[in-house]
Length: 243
Length: 299
Image 1 (cartoon, each protein chain N blue to C red):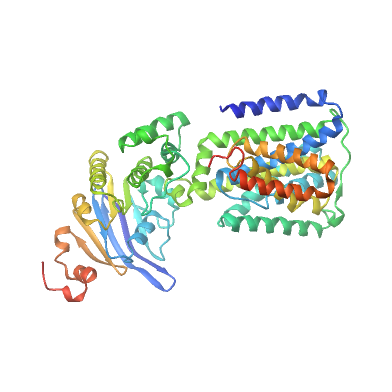
Image 2: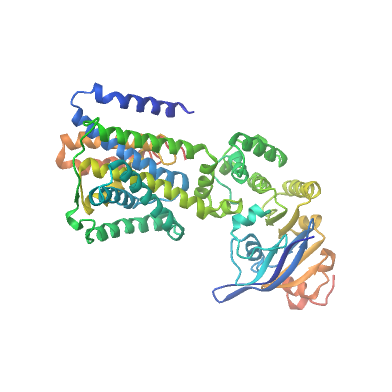
């Protein structure tokens, strides 16, 4: 089943055309990496799927519904969860409260607290439940943001540079956590990522953006052979030199 | 429940019996009524600023709307006071609810200044309309009936209690958590399923409903209202000083701040009339220097 479909999406900021007709589809349970040089439009694309930014043209379908004009909160409740490039936690609230807010629909406060603790347990943060979000380390903050998103029981998870700034041990742990989520819950993962080594441990499909256009959609191992990708990343004169 | 919050209920209990116990009641009744009114205003503002993160510096606009609606209904349509008061509060709350979606696209200073502009502009509009009595204002009859000497005191006491209960509820309810999420990070709140426009509008509506009720009780209490007294920027300042002094985003802080400010103000006013403003200004400066997060502030 196709869970996400992006059709001819365009976006400009002022005179700057950031996305120029992007189209792709994602199947249920798939893990897709989105890479590209800085400024190629990756985060904008993720923001359009999440609903934080409205596209100028084109449509976004999720689970067969056109969600192009839905609020981010509606998309979240439909099952599209996301994390942010720079973590956006509720800093003055505790880790537990951060997760509780995402859970808050349709149950009593004690039941919500119980469920939030379970989710913190799942990401290995239950010992920090009563700590303020602002007091957590970067790795813990990233986990907490993941936990908060998981509380929505997402079917699609959008992760914006979830590995950025983490040490190899923390990266390893998050890779394992994401694998487990994919296997146990069948969550579709879409990762915007610069840490390719970590990304390639998870994904078998990569989209490459360059200057607002989708220039590659395929397996990671074919990426290094693709002329357009080489040109975008390394420049014209490296094309044809091979690996 | 926290110990301080229990203490507040005991405090309210004691206040309920004070009219029987205190000598010179007319005087103390007036002072305490002012303190209770300021408490309600600070608690109402706390729902919005403390829990939702939006400072309605011109929130007194809704005090005016509530007061004028109550007065006009009583005077022109001869509707009894209590229904008029309730409608006054509802009109204030609904007005806020309706203007919230566009207005609350602005945040922090911008929101504060815009609400202040609303308050001043409304004052001017009311001063130039026929049915509001223009700059002459509206005279209301003096209250005659049960509890004659302490009727308004009990009304303000009830209003402060209701405002406090609403703060308690917001502090620890699912609804309140949605507001706190908006206060902390609106984009993140949306991303976890909180419809931020809906929730912040509701918060503005609740806050303005309470502010409007305070305006309605005030109007009947002093029996004469005009645009200057009902849309008074000084009352906005006092509300914020009380709230900031006591502790924004705490349940007990706004009450504590309001009583402290009103008591100090009363003592200074009766003893040192001419330097009243200077001393209040000094109090604000000291508050900012010594307790920047308020006496009970934690953040």
